[in-house]
Length: 158
Image (cartoon, rainbow, N blue to C red):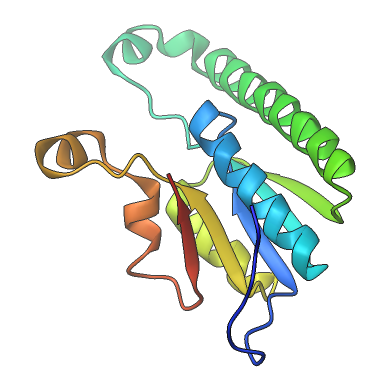
């Protein structure tokens, strides 16, 4: 893919890419790395793990709650590190300067927006299924939650 910016005053130097490690999110990572390489921009790739929400079954097993929470957090950390290791391999292959970060116990849209702000990112790149109607309502979308609240441009990859 060829990347060409029409306006010379638009410069992306710090790009934040959000991923959950899914096949769809990988498309966003690949597009983001292509753009970053073309612009010689630095990339921060983040993955976010949501907070543990106990359910009724967890309440019945109240005496093992701390163990269940610790297992949940360990599982999330292991999964995140696996996702981020794969991202770093792709970054190296693309010749992109890349940092990674796992943000645990946060809601993804909030963490994405806050991290982009803290890191002075110029652009957020995310993937989206682009669902409409009832599918959008039932499945929700972190991308749909980021778009109206982000102060910086968001590139949505499908």
